[in-house]
Length: 88
Image (cartoon, rainbow, N blue to C red; front, side, top):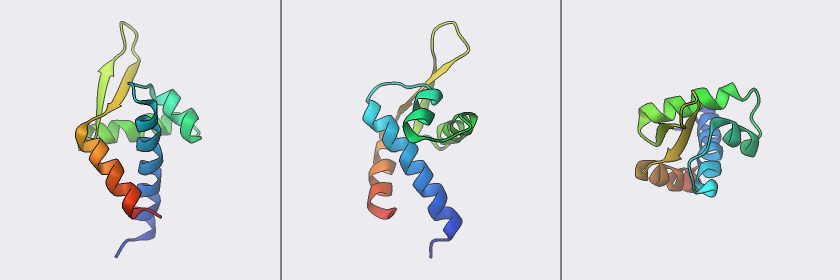
């Protein structure tokens, strides 16, 4: 049984991970937010940080600035494929 809230979070996760997969390069959370259309943009930063703790996204520092870039891990690619099959 999938609860409504879980389905909504999985749909959001699928949108974010799919945008990262399409970019095929490390992206900032701002680029992801604009591609997906989620505002305020900081919500995507929070989601990406949570995905880092899940191990599906990798976070790296971009140069000397305090900005970070995010990229999908192998586990993230597998999760994206699974979400595409299950989320309608």
